[in-house]
Image (tube, rainbow, N blue to C red; front, top):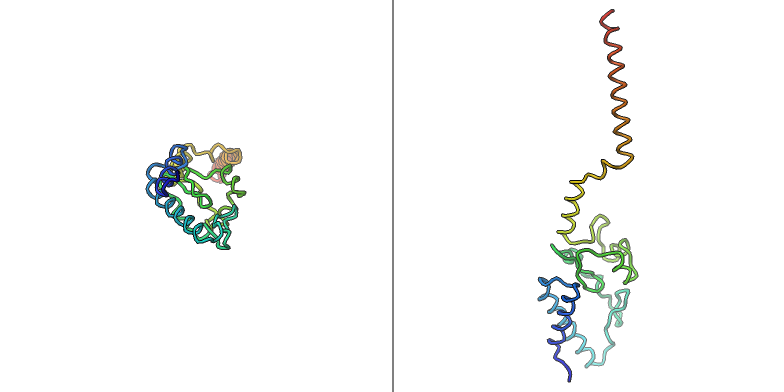
Length: 173
């Protein structure tokens, strides 16, 4: 017995939530989006058009390109980031997930026009990482930084001794 499209959409979205691929706060939007997609597929199936399914490269079977026209800024939310290829939500887009779409972070950014400096993670995750880095100050532990500090300190000590040697000579003159 076939399910109604709304029930099918509900089942799909609930499965995404249970799998951890969708945050509960994004449920309503995803439910609406899934229902609309199912309606479009049903109408295409009934009208006899092509299957309209997007291939991995984002080009629909009817020749139209799919997700490339999506505004990437809307995909980055406070607690989640939405993959613009498959629509799944994560805290960050991992290299492993992008590899499933035959992409790497660089090609993903190029494909959707995302700036090179934009992190592929949720805003909250990015802020937390930034805070951790500022607290731990890893650049102070880097060998080149430590070497430069030692060199600066030794140059400062040499300059002080040189000034100390010049000072008595100048006072005796």
